[in-house]
Image 1 (tube, rainbow, N blue to C red):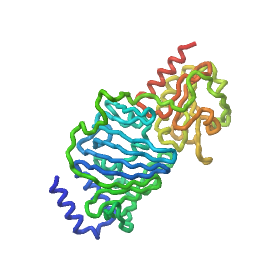
Image 2: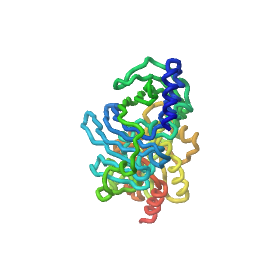
Image 3: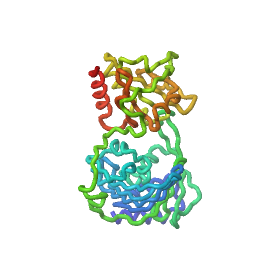
Image 4: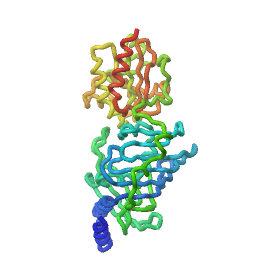
Length: 384
């Protein structure tokens, strides 16, 4: 492995002036792939939030959690409203994290990415530079590359870097094939990735150490005796209306022009799925919503997708029709979003035959979501 690294660096240093942007991108991918491990300090800026963290990545084998890596992250996120600690780690099987809501160290055994995303640590999980965790680094750029323009060289923490503006194609669920742009900062002497800039965030790193050997127990936050255990499948209901109250009534139009009135559905169990054509997680959950509707098609159950749109040009009726979804759609969900205290999308409510809320949750990516919701509706149907 060391010999391969030596040959690669010799080649880089001998002909770097003639390298194209695409060649630099591919050589960086090859260099990252040779790493046994890397420890770096990162500064990132996303919107109004800034983060500073120390990160260790151990590239050893395929894992169901962070692709090709064990990982440990400790740091701080800073915003106008204050700061919070960031701590999470995975040995490739379990996932441990500092829960920002309870300030408790928490563990998920047999972790998977759907379980981890369901913790709500979206900003925290996006802090690391992902290519260092990937089995095939930068492959998503390389496979869909539209262009790789060399810009003026720059320096990151005194490290001379190539600056490559990469255009790559993404099959966006709402807009079809779309070209996105990201700028990569790649070390001229070692081909490591030192920074990523795009329209959403900026990330820059200082490399502390590479190719150190780590034991599995390094990638833990606490002893098993001092950590709370969760399944990663708990539903998230924070901020939503409480169970047991009457669901706020509403009248909304359907794409066909007919009004849908919630109070007229008393006597049926109602599932409301608040979604939007702009929301990728919403779109991913729609097959499950359709499956739930199909399961109860001969029962007194009504499943309604309540569209909450951000643009007047959106066509939610046409959107669901093109994708073959057949459950009813209610438009203008924006007008009732505040009543239902919606912050995260998708969000769902289950309303019993008397018009009372019996279940609610934000995000539908948890494992066994569909099966769990079906059982809750069955229970509601059996009650008087």
